[in-house]
Amino acid sequence: MSRKRQRGAGNKIMKKIYSHIIQIIRDDWKAVLIIIIASSIQAFAVNYFTLHYKFPDLGVSGIAVLTNYVFGISPSWVVLIGNILLVAWAHRDLNVRFLALTLTSILTFSAALSIFALYPIQIPEDKFMGTVIVGLLKGSAGGLMFNVGGSSGGTDIIAMALRRRYGIEIGRFSIFINLFILAFSIEIIGLESVIYGAVGLYINGITLDNVTRSFDKRKQAVIITNIPDEVSKFINSFGKGVTKFEGIGGYTGQKRPVLFSLLEPRQIVMLKRFLKEHDERAFVSICDASEVLGQGFKSWRTL
Image (tube, rainbow, N blue to C red; front, side, top):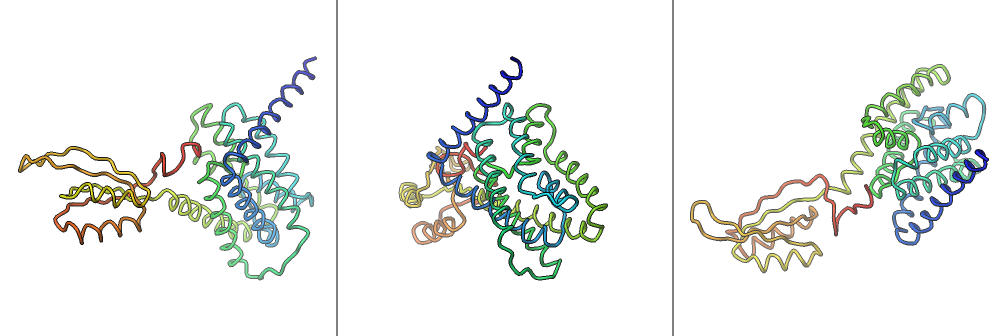
């Protein structure tokens, strides 16, 4: 009875995740499309460059690559089975949307690896070039996934679950587990390939951070002007909101409305031109906003 109950509970979990995947595809199809494209890009990088040059990789994909080098096992099966086990282990600690998008990524990555393996292409024999290409492709794809609130699975699942359970920092855990995989790779593929792989992983991390920041980057503008209504209408024409505060001049004691808005860099340029033409005595303070959450910006569902 206990085994039947466990199987029944496992089936219920998978059915629940499956139903949420279908719901997300219907309600949030753009995020699903980005996950599919990004996962396919990562599979392309692994199949045509990582495996071709015998570079190491990170997380579950790294273990899959090593088993391929040693035993000739298809990495798509190792990635698929390993990640599904991790999803089942961590499902109680992570929100369903994250798990559904991550599972979509896992299935897409495994399927794309199998498909790409059937179609060999000519790859340049320059290892350094291959290192750069792998880093750029995987970093860009990872940034796209994180931006919509998903992940490629593997150690991301473990790290997120351990942070919820025990407060373990994701960065430290990722560094520890991936350094272990890299160190273990030396015995299999040699020090030279590990160094090339480490350079590629470094490029991957920088690219991922830059792609993620580029989606969140906004400019925060505080405006004091004699024509607040006209300025508000101009900002509204971008599809952006404006918040008005009642300000009082510290020297004159005069009441002046203060406008606050979050805009894209190009919209800031247009705003400055507008103020130059209509109110050269306006005062504007502009600074970077590293992340903006809420309506019209990054959705809370991505967290």
